[in-house]
Length: 275
Image 1: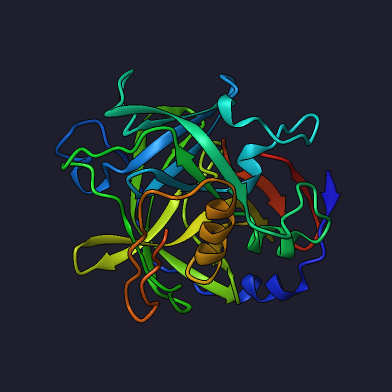
Image 2: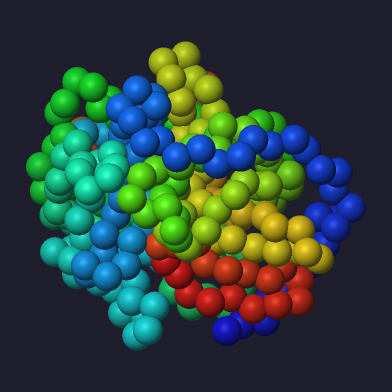
C-alpha cells in the first residue's frame, strides 16, 4: 500500500456532478455489435483484465496487467490469452501472445502515482491475427477535453462473464496524458477502452488504469493513448515486426508500420496493485 501525493486532483472535491448512465451487461450478440473487438485478457490462468483490438493482431491494455501483483515480476508472453468478445463461456476468437511491450519508462510500483498512471499502457501482439469481418479493430482518437462525454466497455469483479457498457460518463479533469473520469470501473476493468464516437464507430481515446476516490467521490483514472501509442508500436516493432496498422482519427495522423482496476485513494489514501 502506498500513500499518494496527487495534489493536482484536489479540485475534484468541488466538481459538479454530471449525469452518467448505469452499466449494462452486453449479454447478446446484438447488444455487443459495436463492441466486438473488446475482449477479456486472462493472465497466467488466474488474473484478468480488459483489452481491445486496435489492429487485427494488436491488443491495447494497461501495463500493470502484465505484472504479477505478488512479486512485481513481468509475466511471460505465453501466460497471456486474449478471449475476444468473451460472453457466457464462449469467445469470438481465442488467441495467445507472441510479444508484448509496456510504455517506456513505466515502472510497476512507481511511487509517483500520477506518473505511473500516465504511462500505464501496454501493447500485445497476438500469435495470430483476428480477421473476422464482424470484428473490425477500433480506431484511435485524441484525448477529449474536460466535461466531454465518453463510453467505457469493461469486464469486472462480479461481471467477468460478459462485458458491460457504460454508455455515458465524463472527463471530469485532465492532466496532460492522465484523465480523471466519473466512469464506473472495478477489479478487472484495468485496460478497458474509453471511447468517443467516430465517423466509422467508436474510437478509443484512453485506457482505464485505476479506480480512485477523492473525498468520497468515486473516479476512474485513465491513460490517454494518442501520443503514447506510436511509441508503443515502435517498441513492439523493434522486438517483433508488426503485421497490422492502427487508424488514428481527428488530426492525429496515420499510425503506420507497423483485472481489475487498482484501488487508489486520491490525496490521502493508498493503492493496491491490480489487476
